[in-house]
Length: 418
Ligand code: DSN
Image (cartoon, helix red, strand yellow):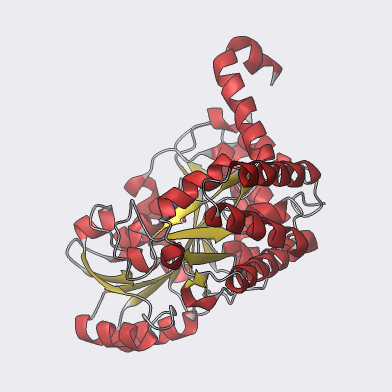
């Protein structure tokens, strides 16, 4: 970044420090990952300069031949990796993807049934301060208090009672397999559309370690930067019969010019997702999460649902007497980055919740395996059990620093497609 360094040293320095921060810390934020240098090159390319309102070969601007090529590649690759009939690769983010589905089949005042945010759902699934909660009538399903698993009986009962126009499956903090077939059946039974938001688990689905909703859902939405390991962005997959309405809601409905540099980067990421290395990485991500979860259980921690089937798990810290926010801050001080999180039926507010969320996509992309995630769990336990012990803090800082040095961000086989 020689030019940037010369022209704008302040921004250059902040970027360098961010690279160093990523290199020198262990990132356990379940929604983050490390995309490859190839993805970053595409995203940092001159395609950012191009206006391309419309769709490939039907643009409102001249000079769109090259951006058409990348959008067509992205669409074909997205369809291929997910086995979908239609793909729209233009959503700027997951929220826009979800908004487009809602706008394509709902009128203001229509009913949505989505997962409760405090049980692991997402803002766009009906949170009152989000567009979804403002425009539509919302009911929520959640998890069973005793098990932490989605309560499919409750879901069906609510669906029968409230007759939603759309049912949304998908979560930001749910550690178990989602039974999309069951969701599809319930939606059919009550005459609702079924949308699966697979943002967190898209990479796992492509890697064959989570069942796909494609056979059952009318619409599938995702971000492209979580387990899928692409650039920050969104994607909609749907049956061909909805293609026209989805495309016209994205443009001109809610977006103008697509971000062609991001679409180029999505195309690159989708190609990487076809490789055996990518699939192996997804399998290892789940293995790492399961191993780490078991280690916490061994050490006396309470996990929501008792463990995990996917890339993340939630620790209920109530029996440790340490709130989630304090845990987040203490761990950041030793180089472990994660986020506080509500646990289902949390009596504390969202800002001061009782739990933390731990995810393994980023550490796995750095080549970290079972032995090391056990070591990370041990470090977390040491800090949370001895929050004011300076010696322990120093030892853990060193362990984390050494682990980071042994796994450089961009050198492990797992994260750069061959
Ligand atoms: N904010 C994301 C997460 O952390 O899960 C979801 O959009």
